[in-house]
Amino acid sequence: MNLSRTTKQFSESVIREMTRIARKYPGSINLAQGFPDFSARKEIKAAAIEAIKRDINQYSITWGSQSLREAIGRKVSWYNNLEIDPERMVTVTCGATEAMIASLKAVINPGDEVIIFEPFYENYGPDCLLSGANPRYVSLHPPSWDFHLDELERVFTENTKAIIINTPNNPTGKVFSRKELEQVINLCLQHDCIAITDEIYEHIIYDGQEHVSIASLPEMHDHSITINSISKTYSLTGWRVGWTLACEEITAEIKKVHDFLTVGAPAPLQEGAARALAMEQGYYDWLSAFYSKARETIFNAIDAAGLHPIQPRGAYYIMCDCKEYMSSKALHSSMDLAMNLLEEVGIATVPGESFFSRDGKGKSMTRFCFCKKEETLNRAVELLERLH
Ligand SMILES: Cc1ncc(COP(=O)(O)O)c(C=O)c1O
Image (cartoon, rainbow, N blue to C red):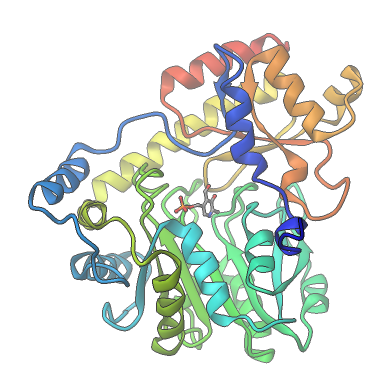
């Protein structure tokens, strides 16, 4: 059949596929897809249950319930140093996933180019293709995952419409510094291009670093779209509530795309999300301490197993460069590596190549996630000891 030439250009998500494969290995631990295996906070769940009981069960305003948009406005004012108009600058979406594709569809014309740092979160390439953009890639170099300014400058062209920045970054854990973001801004302003920033790991950050929202930096008001969601900060990946923040002109277009894509995010869960955004500082302190400990536990175990982890500075993933292990086992691709770790060790990870655009890049890498409760991580440590 003559089906879409666009969808033929990409495959299903490898991250999500690894979760399905892991289910076929009883007793294995899924450190592939990034979702927590512990409970969300009871006061947040209670707010959603209460909303259902109060019969908030019909469509909300398409671009988000007023209570959630106002809660977003208050939260970004204290955490991100952003003053936004909840009426004109917010679109509530079905997760950051919809926020990204709705943003791209709202700004892209056929033939426009979008710059993506690689390794990247898997969705960005297909998102670009589905919105008619040509993705252009620029490398983050391990182990510090810095970009080279001259390489970034070279990838900008007269067709560049947007650049996607994910900070803290999945899969590398890189946290873009203020200086790096300023370099990106200079290029955006020079080329009249929009910075689309995915900041869903903004509260999962280590070693006393600061999270900087590009939209809070001078001159970015009209040149940025900030994407976020409740999935990672509040451990609610299944609720599917996210949002975009942008100036009125851009938001007007995003709202239209969002309306025809999904109409709206789940109404009662938006009320729960509004409660989540009102969590006190103590919650964020707990989150950060919890993930710092989890990072240490899993990093040390991977290191002792000889899989060469690269220390992340944010988010909840660890990339490993397993060249030595692969040659000792005669493995030839990152899928072979991930399958070997699943079959011989009992841990599902994500093959490195799924984070790169070019053949062979990431071939010796695999990604572990550590957003799991202590007992799951302790079990993973025991399994990794098999490699000693
Ligand atoms: C960088 C990044 N953006 C977006 C998402 C998806 O977010 P959501 O669950 O809000 O759609 C993920 C999920 O892993 C992610 O890592």
